[in-house]
Amino acid sequence: MKRVLPFLLAILLLVSCAPSVSPVATPTATPTSTPTIPKVDADLSAALEELYLTSFGGDGNKEWATDWYPYITSAEVVATGHGHYGIVSLSENPVDSGLDDETPKWIARAAYANFKDVYLTHVIIQTAEGNMIDTYDNTLPKP
Image 1 (cartoon, rainbow, N blue to C red):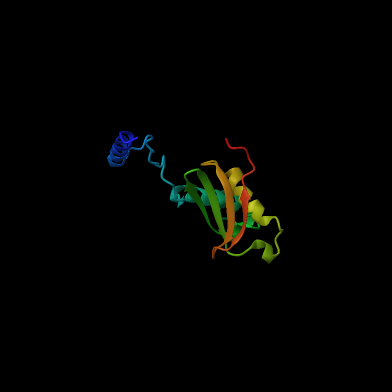
Image 2 (cartoon, rainbow, N blue to C red):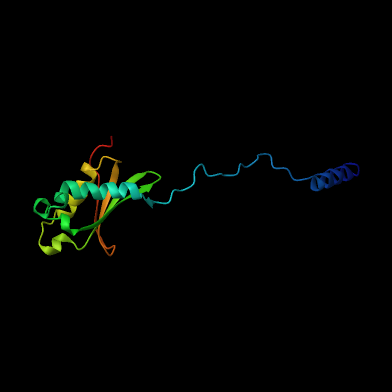
């Protein structure tokens, strides 16, 4: 027993003085992509506004415009890392002025059904002040 005790103490001393080594290296996480900040695409926005004007605004002739076209103050296309969506701003909610309750939906559908430059995943209808009226998902199949 007297011989074993110094031997065990020597092993304990060696183990406690040895450098610490991790048996498994832990990989550091690196992002595979940086998040994309949504950004208004000026060229696509101009094209969407042109679509509204030519197809629903009577191409400038008020006699041929839809009853909801005069409410549109701007139309924007926002690019994200996962696609595009539209934002249509209105001077006021046309429903409050006596138009059909479905009018905001038809304004949104006019964008995503007729705009062919990019696929719009959804269209937000809001007032010019930024108050959301509603959001409409594109129900058409993605090309």
